[in-house]
Image (cartoon, rainbow, N blue to C red; front, side):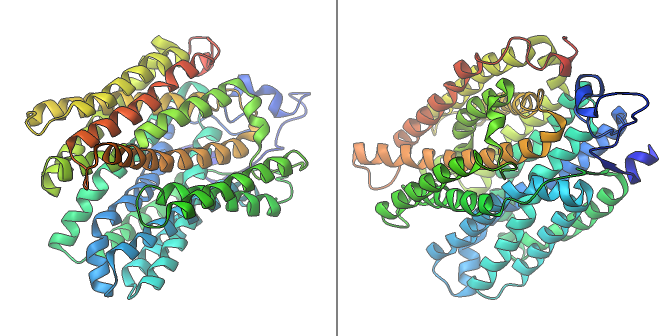
Length: 503
């Protein structure tokens, strides 16, 4: 292992004036994504190790955010609380996660990526322990907020570590690892939660994070470089306030609309307030030298197309963890155990795609991948609308397996080409903006699935959803995802050629 990679603090201003008359940002094309930071290129073995460490931390975060859903009725019984009120244990975490993500880039630049990533694991694990020790709902909510603060730092900072240490030719392979926790966690979380609450104490839902977190802290300390910016600029406190208000409004509105938990007017009001705060932030960002979320990055074509096309794609895919288990259990009458076994098939497809991603993108190019593979992914999502209770399990497994295969490739392409043309000094800002919108779109996907389901129930006057309602819901979210393919045509033909070796 390169000793400099493990222990040296890499400063953004580090460059040898004798060997170059330009600051390192001018040499981005030569030294890879990590250019401008004088970071030594990692070997393929080091790249895989760093990617696995980051992926494991993200898997812990993604798994925890969904595993609790199945256990909420059991936890409510233990607290002597109404199960409906327990939804706040989910929303408090998502709110904390989303509100603090925008600050992650600046914090990593100021205190170092390794330090912040390790601290994020510590905070997340500590929050998990407190959740396991909770005796009432208010204590649980406070612990979930703490967990969200840790998770907010893990998501973008983990990606930033890879972007700044991995050579461009290795970036596609490294990013393929990061798609796995995003796809697997939400799928296996609900059935895992069901197994734990059935055969063990519900508190183990949170305690299982302790050994994973401890191992992650050791591995990050040993193998993750402590990259930081020399001059990160002033912290945009007003930007955090406005972003927090906007994201909180959107999240509250999207999470509650169509679910009947609160009046529709309250959900709409939250979304309107979020929109107002977002417009205020856009006005503020144009007048601030170092905004918390740098919207000027949307002028970079590869980044902008990845945002707009990826957002449409994520809305459709984000509905799967909500719609699929509910369709199998409510619409088809399957047990929770059988439902979990079926939904896991899409995760298996994601695992198969990991080693195939680099050659597939090299052959098709990023634009070709996003258009062709994106259309295939949307079509396979739409095929879920054709599922019937009488379908053989093997046929459902096959559709989900192939769908997971294509979705994994699509996420790898989006998450890689988004950073192809980002200047090194703006990499932290790019990961913050990208991760914030990514989280928001996945949440919007759940809201879209619920909205289509409610629309079908209202049109057909069904008091409870049946298989026809789920068909309309899947068709609706698949159509949204399909729109991502033509948007991706705006991507330059040679986008990311340096990342794949085509250019």
